[in-house]
Length: 227
Image (cartoon, rainbow, N blue to C red; front, side, top):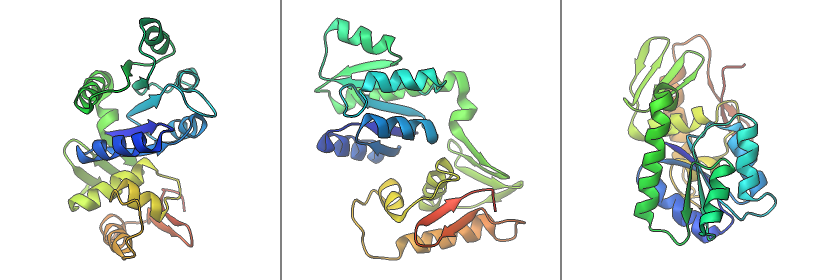
C-alpha cells in the first residue's frame, strides 16, 4: 500500500516511515500541512496518516480540504489530544480513524490493515492496479504487462516501477528514489539507481512503439505516456 505520512516531528516521522517500509508499504512523507495537502492532492495515495497539530495548515483543515475536493482515501489522524470530544471532532472533520499519542506500533499497523480492508471492499481493483498507457501493474499478483506481453521483473525492479507509476508524469529525483525505493537517507555514491533504471527501461520499453521511461537531464527521471 502507498501511505502518506504528514508529521512535523522529524524523529516520529522517520520512525513511522521506517516501520511502515519494513512491513512492505511504499511511503511518502510531508513535514507540514500545506506540503501534505499538495502531495495528497497530486499523487496516488492509498492511505494518509495525519498529525492533528501541524504547522502552516493544521491536520483537521487538511483533511477537510481533501474531502472537499473529493479525495476519498482513508485518513488516520494521530494526536496527543485524546478526549472524547477531540476524537469526535477529528472524525467529523473527515478522518476515518483517530489514534492518540503515544501509541503502540502494533496497534497502528492493525488499524492501517483495517482501513485498507474497508477501502478494498469498495474499490479493490483501483487499489491494487496501476495503469499508464498500455503498461499495467498489479500489486496483488505482482504481475506487469505491457500491450498484453508479460514482463518479468526482479523484486527491486517491481518496487521501482510501482514507485515511478505512482509518480507518473512527475520528475522523480535520485533522492526520492533512494528514500522511497531503497530507504536510504543518504547518497551511497554508487550507480545503483542508474543500473536499475537501465534494466527497467530495457524491460518495459525495448521493442515497443514508444518509450515511457525518460531521463530528465540534470533532474532525474519521468515515467510518462507523453513524448
